[in-house]
Each structure stands twice: as C-alpha cells, then as structure tokens.
Image (tube, rainbow, N blue to C red; front, side, top):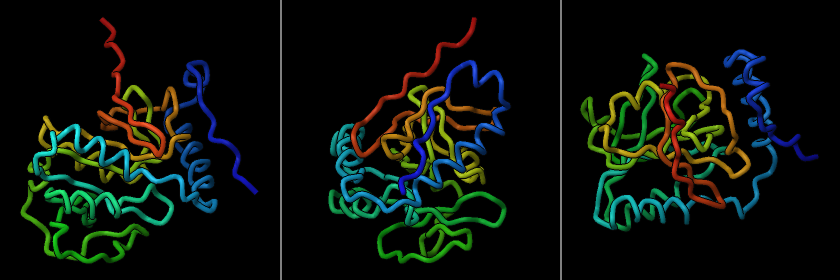
Amino acid sequence: MAADPIPDTSPGTAAAEPSTARKAALRQRIRAARRQPPSPTRDLTPNLLRLLSQLTSDIPATVACYLASRSEPQTRGFIAAAQEAGHRVLLPQVRVDGGLDWADAAGAGERDSGLGVPEADAAALPEGALREASVIVVPALAASETGARLGQGGGFYDRTLADRALTAPVVAAVFDDEVIADLPIEAHDRPVDWIVTDRRILAVTPPTPIQ
C-alpha cells in the first residue's frame, strides 16, 4: 500500500502549530513514504551532474557530498561521475560531538557510522577541510523554494555548514514530492541555495526581509 501523500502546508497552519511539532510530523510522514519500494526512475544523478557542470563551469573543483542511506536519494553514481570528471570529492564522517569530519573519496571505503547512515572509511582530513569545497551536496527530508531545509533532526549538517566557504553553494537533494512550500524553520536551521530532485533543478529564491 502506498504511503499517504506528503502534505503541503499553508500560512494558516504555520501560525497554528509550533515549528518543532510541524517538523516532527513532517519527518514521520516523509520517512514513512521513503520506506516504500524505490522507483528506478527517481534518480537524481543526471540533474546533480548538470548542476555541478553549471556551478563549476566544468573546471575541476572540490565537491563535498553525503553518502546516501538506503532510503535517501542516492549519491554514489554522482560521486563516481564527479570523480571521473576530474573533481575531488569529500565524504563525511560523523563525530561524537555532533559535528562532521571529512575524508577524501579517492581510495575511501564505506562503513556504518553507528547512526544508521554510511560514512567514509578513511583518514579524516584536517579541521576546516569543508572550506575547500566549492559545492556542497547535503541530504534533506524536504526543502522549500525559499531555501528552508528539513533534516533528520540531529543537526549535523546545520552545525557543519557554519564552517563552509561562504561562496560555496549548498545543494539539497530530495525527491520531487519533498519540495514543500512554507517549510517550518528555526533559528539554527541553515538554508540551501539550490534544490535538486529527480525531475528538476531549482534555484532558491529567499524570502524578502521585512523592513
């Protein structure tokens, strides 16, 4: 049986429910939907490569990218193709303090992080390695066209993105039905600059600040 569709939300709903409660409800629904058998047509690799080509002008660069778990939009094809195109790829490693280290994908294996997600099995690069990345591809459960990102709730990427080069665009990888309007956000949430799905590439349009 198919999971219930992921609900879109409205400003009226946003005012009625605290952000934390809405996030928890959305996470539950999206995780349930992702447990359904994946469709082979839901491949983000071509769109990720198109955007990478655009952002780097096909000049070899350093790209940071997550290693996908079974239910997430897959990234291994993208990682391999990026390396074949001459890009250096950095892969994450979970730290006990709730942050992320990074390792070079060249020659790296994979291991379980202990949190149910894979990580690079290789020597960690020195602190600050993420600042070398020109493009950063992050996991998400949902994203909005104004740049909000809903993660798994651990805060690993929110903390890590504070240490990136400010010129490095952040790309959220989600399935197309996980682009949700009026996504709840909190002060610690780090926005994204692009959204890539299995159907499209979206440039984020940040909301206009209130004067």
